Length: 93
Image 1 (cartoon, helix red, strand yellow):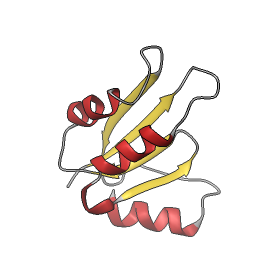
Image 2 (cartoon, one colour; image 1 turned 30 degrees about the vertical axis):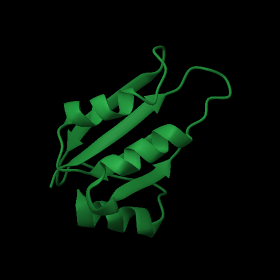
Image 3 (cartoon, helix red, strand yellow; image 1 turned 120 degrees about the vertical axis):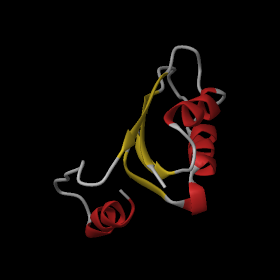
Image 4 (tube, one colour; image 1 turned 60 degrees about the vertical axis):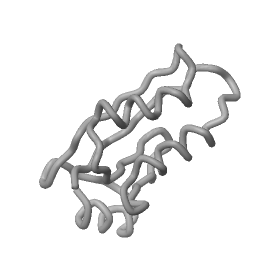
């Protein structure tokens, strides 16, 4: 199953991230998600970048920014990340 990088900027002060985070988790297949950076997630999903984006659009404001990109094997590198984060990437991307 493909993995998708999701990153966002919520532009309203005091924005509640819980609805967006719940929606991101709901888009992941078998509850496979990675969230070690503040506004960045990686999920494994049987959807497409467009379908993931469309599902998340309902949880953000019209002035917020959202990016969903399909990622694949060998296309990542990390620095100063916990071993658990790297292991997840090795197993799922």
